[in-house]
Structures are given as structure tokens and as C-alpha cells.
Length: 217
Image 1 (cartoon, helix red, strand yellow):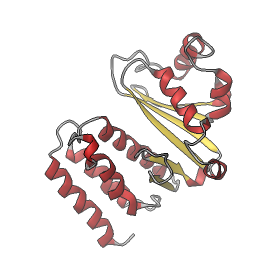
Image 2 (cartoon, rainbow, N blue to C red):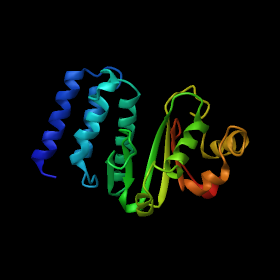
Image 3 (spheres, rainbow, N blue to C red):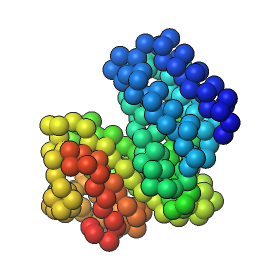
């Protein structure tokens, strides 16, 4: 990507961020991430950065709230893309192949993988896992061609609330809690669906990033 194109993207975002006056999310945090992505050789579609930003910050349906969950979700998608880029992968961050929503998704080309990201705000972890499963299994969410092209399906759940019961758990503790309280329990997660659908489920909590493969449940 040419220097001018990178500079234009960053400059445009800085203008928007200044105009909207970020408070909760923070101008600096998002603008730094945009700058890092625009300058990353593993980021394959920097031309979509402005479109991704506009889908969150400019759409009238948000009623001008650029500090809400949509802004946090977008930042998390950007951070997830940068995580895989830093591991020498080539990545798309785009909403072009999402369903009829403006949801931005991460695609890891070198791993032939799609990543569905969620943020845990309450105690609905089981619901979020089921939403990730539905993203990959429900008709109309993703095309069969796309799923065939990227057959590895990952999930990522961010747990930032320090009072959440999963916040300080390590890998084995999370597995144990799933087995005891969520897997094949009423209103929980069907274990076989989880194993068949999500090859890797990533958690980010007070312990850092925890990766649980489908063979470990």
C-alpha cells in the first residue's frame, strides 16, 4: 500500500475521531490500531478500513453514539486481526461477506480460517458460544462457498469485566467449568455441535489468551 494511501486513511480517521470526540472508547486507542493495521504488510484489505469505520461511527441508526458497544466490537475485531498478523499470517478484516448486518469479521488466509469474535458483558457465555456456532451452521449467515474456502472455524470471546466468573480462570478451569455447567446441560451448549463446528475457541481474560481446541473438550 502506497504511503499516500496509508496517510489518507489515518488522516481521515483522525478527522472523524476529532469531530466525534471519543470519550469512553478513546480516540488514541482506535487511531493507533488503525495506523498499525494500515502499516502491516499482512493486512490484505486496508482499502476497507474507512468503510469498516463508517459502518460503526456514521450510520444514522446508531443515533450518534460512537462510544457504544459497536465501537468496542470494531476495536476488538481490529485487535484480533492484528494478533494474527503479528503471528505472520495474512488477514482480511471486512464486512463484505457478512450477512445483512454491518458486522466486521476476521479471515486468516494463511490458516484458511474464519474468526467470529464476541465480547462477554454479562454472564451469558453459553449464549455467546451458541451464537458463534450459529454463525457457522445457520443457513444464510455465511455462504457455503466461503465456508468451503475457509474450512477452519474459530471463535474468540473477550472477557474484560474483572468481576466475571471466567475472568481469572486458566485453561483447565475453563474446560472444567464448561463440562460441569454448560456442555449438554439444559439451556447450555450441545457438546457435539461445539466440537464439530469450532476448531479453536479463544478466550481473552485476566490470564491472557487461552486457546482451547475442539479435541480438548
